[in-house]
Image 1 (cartoon, protein in one colour):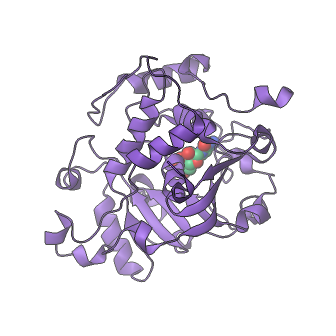
Image 2 (cartoon, rainbow, N blue to C red):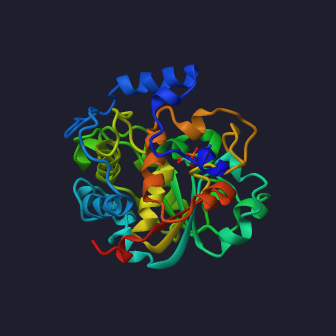
Length: 321
Ligand code: C5P
């Protein structure tokens, strides 16, 4: 059973990384930019490892995929409140039957997964293009999840590029761990709200939601609670945020090349000639641990991971907890 050794090990630890990356990850693990308060076992392997079904139920119970609405403080008293949606993403969108979460990993190159992905509703991330890569990543974008850094960077032409104009947009920005919406509004990582307002003026008809930062930290807590070592005190990557978001919108979720297939490579993104193992293993984000969690929840065979980089997760509505 050679493939078993080559698919993602759900107990991958920072100690298994190469020296350079180990130092980078340990550096992030020693920082606490967002003032995370660790509760529970926090780094001690005292809790029994949960089975996949138990983990799925824990996630469903503890993580609330919520978005910012116009009736919430401080937005309700701001002049541009009416630009925000009045309802939650999860009440406006879906339910979808089957969804594809398309990571931006370099291992999607030459995968030929495009047709398979296009048979789903699909979520893509940040500046990942489809044009020119249809054969490997498909062409359908139902939702695009963007971080505030991409929204704010001049290089990524968020306001003017047609890359962002199909489907529904969802944005996120890391908030201090214990901040309420007002404190976050006054201290965002990147100017998410000025860019949101500008984008809405230019594209008033495209649906555009903003994730509540408490969702990010609830998910972070679930990762930490289920790991035997302290994880980076930074929000989960877009890939995991999008995966859990789709679990609340879809009956079945297929995640592509989040757990690397046999095409595993140090090529960071399928759309760019840049090599760094940190893209797959994490530096700022607790990506290694996110992948451990996803591996434990996977309901598909290891062979799917090996050949297609494919993980199968149930939608939250399909779980009997
Ligand atoms: O780099 P970016 O955040 O835009 O990529 C989208 C997501 O795809 C990441 O947040 C991460 O979860 C996943 N990814 C990965 N391995 C890579 C590149 C991206 O798992 N090599």
